[in-house]
Image (cartoon, rainbow, N blue to C red; front, side):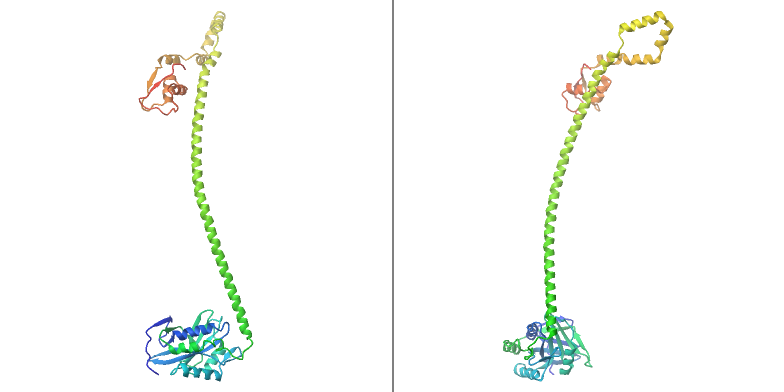
Length: 393
């Protein structure tokens, strides 16, 4: 064993155990990945070439090359290592990796992940009898690479959580890769194997189903993404339309409010006009129901000649006096007719209703005052304004 020299350019994969450290050169690592994936759904074996270095309490496995397994025989569901396989490996070590040894085995199992096949574990125990020799399990489909090592009693393979990939010039591995490039399809499989094992066929079918399921899921995801985009666009368009409609509705409400106010003002004017008309007709009605002076004098004369006491009683009756008072023209109104000025200066707090009440005894003259002064709004008066007052009412 030689003293270990730490590589200067390394990449850490996973967590590193302080008691055992595995370093694998990038050329060898790349070759193993391509080699495992090149077998399609078939399992493959390869031998790990390197050195074992003890550095105090730490055991270091340095992998700087790899040799494919050739002349294997397929039986009992696995690839079995033969004597010819070992002879081929040693020949390649002498030719390309002089001074190195076999430090482990790589087994690829597409689609099976990190599952340990007990048959391969037994084969590894029977062919690799050194505790530092490692077992690399690869799944090129799931992109899984896990190193294992036996416990002290060589009863159980335990996974190693992490390892290092280091980068340096590796001419030996480069020459081996170039030399074995053309025989790529024959280096792992048994040359006498002609029929595909049933478990390989089953594994292919399982992988095809998984692949098809993944493709279907991708299609569904893409369809949902497209549908979401369309729904977002529809919601955006509808939102924009609602904003525009809200503005139109607000404008329409304002127009309706304006029309309603205009109608209310018109209705108020019509009601005032009807009130004036009613007040104008009232004196005529009263005049029509007034008793004729001649008839009244005759009745009074008859009553006075026949029964003076009864006449005095009748004239004293409160109900008759009240009726006569209501029928007779108001002397107050007559006096107001003489007291109404031609003009009036508006004072603070005045309104047309108050002015009409003041001079005419009620608010029936508002419209005449507005008409006489050319007004279209009863509220448009101010202190100091001179109003003309109607003379006839």
